[in-house]
Image (cartoon, one colour):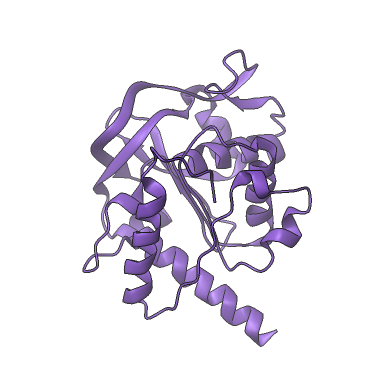
Amino acid sequence: MGDKRPAIQAHETIERALRHAGDALSLDVETEFLSTGQLTHMVAEQLLPFDALWFGPCSPYENFDGALRAIRFARESGLPFLGTCAGFQHALIEFARSVLGLIDADHAETNAAAAEPLIAQLPVAMIERTSLVRLDPNSRVATLYKRTEVAERYRCEFGLNPRYLSMIHRGGFRVSGVTDHGTACAIEYSEHPFFIATLFLPECTTSPSAPHPLVLSWLTAAKNLRSAKNVS
């Protein structure tokens, strides 16, 4: 999910990452791309047929409120959620507004005068950059990677404003990864079967012989949800 633009190659790499992970898990993965412009107020009905949701890059989204409604549905319903780049940013905004009561939480890219600039310009832009990620050894993300330091690819200029870091953590989100500059770049929600979002692009570091661990785990969560639906 997101908004496709010709200059953004990440949506193609997402399809490739899904093929790599699906083949590794012997899963027949069916995908459908939804733009945020297609989201309505009946988002629950729109997303109910799906077994997982991936919110990809390309900010600003065409339908900001629709994107937040979709993320909230995934978070509250247990739908496996993976957010990358803009998906990370909007997952934080949704959580701040819906859970923390920070109703003015906003994205500085689209609202430079935001009262609560939860997503702000990064001190160092991460455009087409590969950089070190330091993982919390007690996090689920570190468990999935089976290591505490990894190199990942970025294409972003905006991230979590550090002044809101402690509030996000107290609210229930764990910051499971930071850049070498100390900027939050991975979050997880422990009260959910699979809710992980990253500022970096795991879809860019995958191959047939080495599918990305986050994508593997997300697809496994989707498979488990599909099995539960079939039983019920």
